[in-house]
Length: 371
Image 1 (cartoon, rainbow, N blue to C red):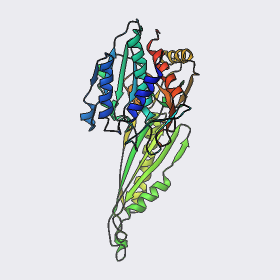
Image 2 (cartoon, rainbow, N blue to C red; image 1 turned 180 degrees about the horizontal axis):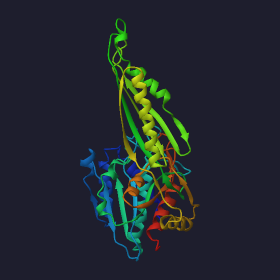
Image 3 (cartoon, rainbow, N blue to C red; image 1 turned 135 degrees about the vertical axis):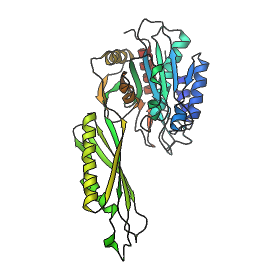
Image 4 (cartoon, rainbow, N blue to C red; image 1 turned 90 degrees about the horizontal axis):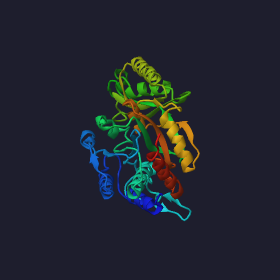
């Protein structure tokens, strides 16, 4: 049922449109025109204005012929950098890459085109289907800013499939962690480093002491932590009066993530005090952990769709965040579905014609499912 030529043509067109986070206008306009061309009404919300982006989230509802509950399909329209002047290069063996100077953007344009193609087949062939909702979000790569700004009062679905996972089609993530991002600002006291260093309080040393004491890496089963940024000082002859570190904590247990942040905070406060400085520490909960029961209807329906598509169903956790974390916070049971993206967030990103076809077929089989 899938039209491979149309699927790949749409993928190449979308890849060619610049859509770094906060600048998804070109892709959103393309999608609005496409939905219009297949006779589907599409609405753009005001998330762009709320988060400072050039476009908002796109929402679609298509009433169904089957007596079944609506289900939601979601993917995101933004890509990570380097994202300007992307080009999809299709090799003779069907592998699709960028030209090597940018990401490809299969994260998450592979998800977008899979959903588009499935819906297009249903519309053009007049195939009976269940009620379908679609949200194409903006700014997902910045910890789901777009989805967080979405008006969930619009949604009718209680189950969702977020097409935004790397790996072979048939793989799905049934759990994902809380991600806490923290910032610790160390405030010292400036002094001349040559003549009066004893009068200063060294903010960089306080920060470095804290960094040495903060656990990093895979610090426990299902828990990781990292200090990723450190910045401070003004000149080599001045005792620095300020230094900032930025880090993150990931845990499949939301309460555990916050407890580990509190440990980091105590380390920062203690390190600052020992060197005569102060520390101001705060965190942002970027996404909240979710876990979907493997016996749930959402997962069982996915297993049946995988069997119908001819792919092996593999259920696993993911250590990354996605729009599904946000959906779960709003009472929507979902999983994150692999859409043939590989080596994401690098210029070596790739997908394939065969896997994109399977991703579209999987979306189609979910849309026409009766359970």
